[in-house]
Image (cartoon, rainbow, N blue to C red; front, side, top):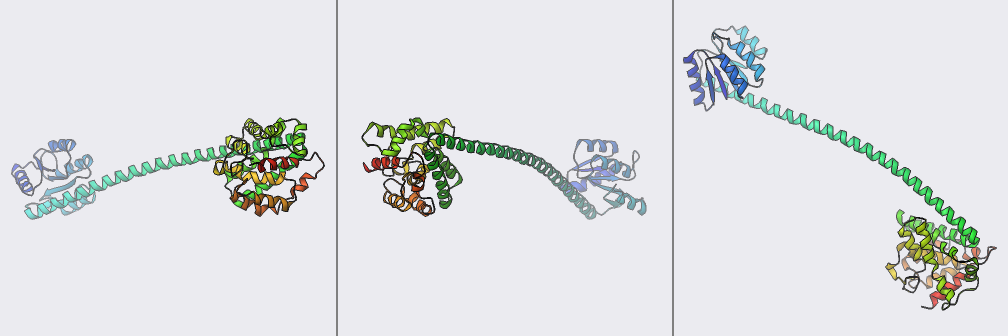
Length: 377
């Protein structure tokens, strides 16, 4: 839209006709105040004003127009103004161009076209600037939100680390408690458990077991024989010392000790996964173990890693004989993959007979009893 203001109706009509023929929309008025009101109500791209008007000069009108619509291109039509005054007006930003009287129609149309294009560029730049400002504000808000989230996550991490530190300390305390209980019940049983834990840690490291499985395996190693305390010391030592007839009531009782170990593990709140591993540490890979006769991959993974270690330590044999027996039972009692990793550590481990010959009620007869149970498959 182009606003034309000139109190000479003939000039006004000529300007309006020329601009309409140039395919421009035009609002023409001889009253400068009507023109200013139009600027308050409508968006215009170009303002053309005559300098010599009775109610207001063209420069005064264009100066007021600049305050109402800064991006509108202002053109002054004059035949009398000095060049210095026009240059000052241009420099102050009051007008964009001036057209002298009489004007050339092509020159007028070319000037107006340039003025329209200038307005469009200013509007586009203003829109881009507004968009950029909004994006910057959004980015700033997003950065602040991100910083707050990072701080929140850092606090959560610190709290989690504190919690995990407390958890690990609590778990270590449970292991010490377990060792104390076993030592009070039977020092040899405690020594055997400690060696089982030690070898399991080495096997886990050598095999590259992931952290969660390693933690489960170590906890299971600590608690796998805790179920023996459910029996009298006399019964436990009888099993350790003289062995058990597989068909006797004593054998049935012996088969229950993994269940007692599981119950005590759960009471210690070590978790169901560790409880299941403890329960299954006498299961056999071919399904001939106890208490649930699980087969192969049905046996919890931690239990499959624990079983040959516990068997090795409980055997009371010299190292070579114990290793030979475990190799013989690979695929029968033990997972062959686990056996292959265990054998890399076995010859670096203390000989089981060293535990069995410590001065205390001999527990190696439990191995004899278990061997009899395995051999009845």
